[in-house]
Image 1 (tube, helix red, strand yellow):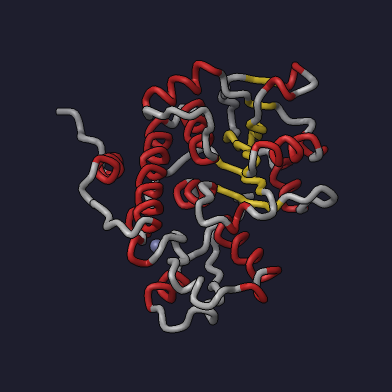
Image 2 (cartoon, helix red, strand yellow):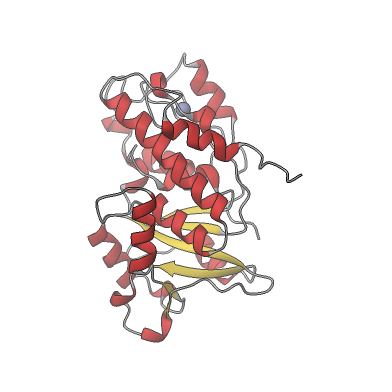
Length: 272
Ligand SMILES: [Zn+2]
């Protein structure tokens, strides 16, 4: 079965009337992370909505309307799918980058994590024979060494499914330990040389990779470099818009990040 097909589910925008852009977004299909966010907001934040706080942000990209990047959402078909298991608060963060994965990878599913319960849809997906699931996690935390793999070997008739624990590091470790339904699956452990190559290419200084960067690395390992590069470039553009919005700086639509993303979206030149 396809994972979480992007069926149209209009978002209740009663809280932000009069925004034609928001209404246009509501008519679009919501992806898995957007649905999880909407559900999570409905569930517990209703009494706490600050006046005007939701009006400022575009519901399509979570950035302020003045810095909306919905028009830049990339579309790259991928063989691989992504399954995000998100810590409770994660879908609410406007800076969450699992959202960007769902923007681009059509087969992205997203589930909220709870210690005592598991969504049956998640279990169905893990058992679905079309998928070859990998839990992406550092190998040194895995007790059974035979579970750890460092590459994605194609299996006939199956598509790689990357399970990413979208949370802070300490939460992710807890999720990994306390999710017995993941215990039978291979663990894809990203290797230091893969990580340092990635950092080198991206001129990244810090050690921490965000969720969409991990997904980009996984796509690369799955032999989908164009999708990997596009997701990385999209993250740069998102970060650019997000920070500029925060600092009230206008977006430069012709800067290096935008040009790179645009170039990746152009059809490859056909050889003579
Ligand atoms: Zn937007």
